[in-house]
Amino acid sequence: MSVNRSMKESRLKTEKFPDAVSRKNELYYQLKNLPALQKV
Image 1: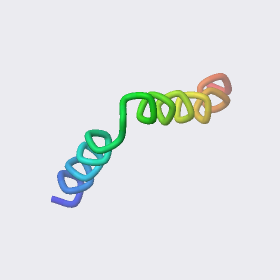
Image 2 (image 1 turned 120 degrees about the vertical axis):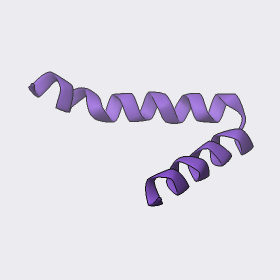
Image 3 (image 1 turned 180 degrees about the horizontal axis):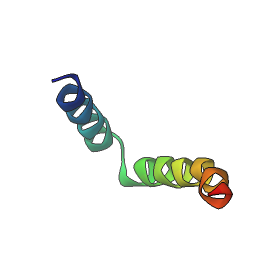
Image 4 (image 1 turned 60 degrees about the horizontal axis):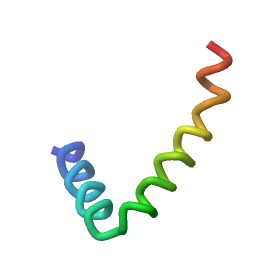
């Protein structure tokens, strides 16, 4: 239930924000996870 709620909230947030902002957040998330991916 909590997972579904968080998914809905994140979806609403991305809908509220312009595409550029959500794209920037995606890039930031990927960059943050790059070191973790390289370690494996």
